[in-house]
Length: 367
Image (cartoon, rainbow, N blue to C red):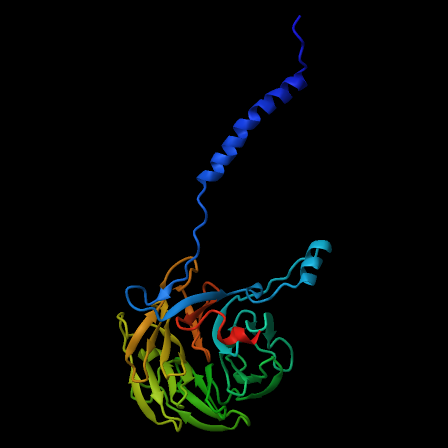
């Protein structure tokens, strides 16, 4: 008489008989999935030209720089705490100083600090005194003081590198729309770019004593001649003291001596390299080269001190990939030659490293 098998027993035997097939299917399935390609950071310019810069990282959130300690991991796991992540919402200006990247955020009404050198994230301008309303331009002096132009309050706010409020200068009588600020290499003078308005002739740069806040001089007025401006936006000061101003409405950059006298202008309206369509941010490096952001081109162009084009980096593109931009704004170059480029649309700061500089040289050496 054949042995009877229960329904449950038959099911178990059937499942066991399928295990080898299931195992082979899983192995075959895993074998068919190719490994994710390793990210290769792009270099600029692209081959066959010799590379001068390499993409290093993007900064958007606090966890891009914050280090997680063993105690942090314990609290998150054992106590069920949630990690708080902060970041950029509408960045505009950027300034870098000894491994600290300061970014103005007009939507959050503060300055975000990515402290790469020490693995910290913090915010400046949140509390009174020193509370910001619409921070735009930003610069850090050689003394480590952080200067921020507030377009709504029409003042310049000054903080320590750690974010302690020190002082303000300027007022609604002097300023119309202060959009940019740059400090001389010796830290004694602050140049404030006043964008003016449609019905105003006050398209100019005001010069202040960086410590006392005394108004020393005004450079320019509205116009198209040498030394005149049409919607100036940002400024930067080279190591030799030359002041460079983005003259947005005239599609050019103008250079001035420390005494305010006109030196030269370069750039013109156009769509070819060396020309401008919508210039915005500007920076200089230790060699005196000038970096100019063009929002319409989605890139920044690098010029020598005579205004001759050396190269450009970036292009318009979706997805926020490295060197892809939709609304680029501020730019800065640090002591090591790293470039920091803000994109408002993708809420990020792209960092590019000179090809000769190793990844952990410079600011990372302060850790």
